[in-house]
Image 1 (tube, rainbow, N blue to C red):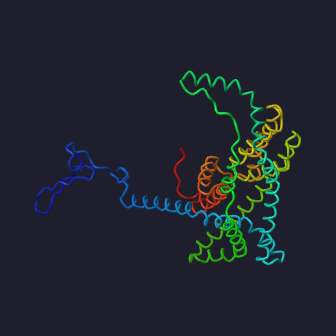
Image 2: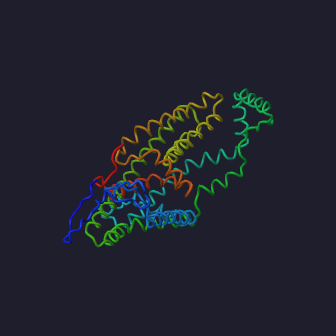
Image 3: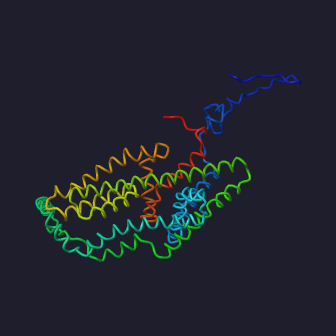
Length: 384
């Protein structure tokens, strides 16, 4: 026994029990208590549970507000992100003795002109093809006769399991799909107006807004950290926009050349569509591949000829996505593929195609905030 016996002044013996030998209430075995609190099982306190619950409710509330208020939040957030990307250009014009307000207007006008030019290249073939949907459907049906045998086997399999032997005939959707699609893809005039006004005012007043955010903190270290975060966000978003634009223009030019060499109709419009869709990761190249397959099936008499441009475009996007873009952007802003996919799915569900465009900038901003708010020298979990 580790108990100690001591004598008091009155001559009586007092038995002192060590802390490790004290009995747990209700324990007849007499097992000692743990020597340290670290051996006790972890307990989730009520305050921690309430904090987690409140944080979850806050996230749900924010997502709900952003989803319901899409007509307001989407153009405003879009203007903030694009304005941050274009702020280095405004600063460059300001160094060239151009007032910042005038530089903001010139930048927005130049960007609008470029977007309008790309839309004009894309809209011309789309409008032409939409007026010939019945003829295109008949041509596609004739080109897909090679699948008659697989379809016959499918009918036999359905007959064996007791299903209907009829297989739905192939036909393009009716013209009614055009209007809902355009309504989904294009914002309203009010959203356009809110976006452009907010964008101009944000670029013109970004320097003052940044100073106000920095001076909002009373601590010198907090001000310095905020300044570094804002500078890095501005620089990296600007570099991202410039780099991705140059890469996507290159992809568009290469796609146009591929379409011209393979004999595809309207190679300029297809190249502009490829450059535009490539701003949306993962979904954009897949959609462009499907467009090239459909156009090739209409334009060429054989399946092999119809797939030439699409396969060449697939090889081009594979090289661009796995080698060119990661090398140019660099590993510091290299985004995890799973994170990109989840962010793309979430923001596309939230705000549609414009949300898909914002997914990568949001991830870049989150990466920068993580680096500054959770530095590498903070306590980390051990490596597995």
